[in-house]
Image 1 (cartoon, rainbow, N blue to C red):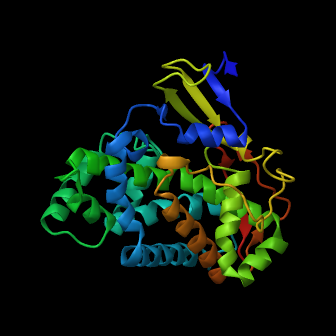
Image 2 (cartoon, one colour):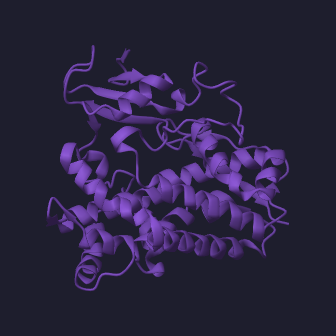
Amino acid sequence: MYDEPFGAWLVSRYADVRAALADPRLVAVPPGRTLAHLEGGTHSAHRAVVSPAFRGAALAALSAGVARTAFVLARRLAARQEADLVTEFCQWLPTAAAVAALGLPYEDTARVHAWCRTGLDHLGGRHPELDAFLRPYIARRRAHPGTDLLSALCTARADGRPLSDETVAGLAGSLLGAGGEATAGGLASFFANLLDHPGQLGVVRARPALAAGAWAESLRRDPPLHVVLRRAVEPVGAIPVGATVACLVGSAGRDPARFADPDRYDAFRTDPGQLAHGSGRHFCPGALLARLTAEHGLRALLTVLPDLRWVPGFRPTPEGLISRSPRSLPVRLR
């Protein structure tokens, strides 16, 4: 249906949202320079460049880096009585993980974290200082590549040609922005759901392999982005060219025609679906980094802070319309 106040066609059911996110006639907005904005053969070529960084030895190195970062942040809280997991863990871990994945200096994490609060987002939204910051690192990786993701981007070839510095910076910015916004919100909801269900948390603690399913279920019930916008470049049924389409991911994840008891968080749900990171050709390759961040973050917290629980009387309250998650998670650590 068309919603006049929102100025967009709304798509809300699970099957329709999944189809819309995968439809090549509906493209990402606003204009940008990330994988989400590329179409056709250009998208396929660039995706083939990024994907190897999330396989084999590169994936093992990436996972080890995320794990180290998670334990560093958890240990910083170990001597405390109470902490806010959002401001002291969730907002920092994804940024630090993305910085590590790109092979950037750890001491630059605070700078990137600040940029994510002022314009840098999951679609690589430009920050006035980002390209200038990345340019010398791109030059060094082109001359002396390593095993990090930035090196993979700098040495890769698409259609027989190396990626431009602008494209490399755009892809790197997309990963950094996702770490600063979407994954941080997803982590906050993930920890909130598990702390709200201590029985399920106890099972996941005893069986860490279940953490991936618990993360997927949290993304279904409480995705960090509840609304994903697309623009029609061809007519799609009643939707005209140039129209904005709002894919209501939050609604789709609670579609009773697709999920039994959709409002209930069930870490052991066998098929939680998969819409929070896109669908079809635009399924976000950074989804794997987000999952690793969630799994290692949870493991570090439960290992270092085994008595983790809510501050008495607190219950999380998600806030926001398009981006939605708890803004604070006060917990007892001892």
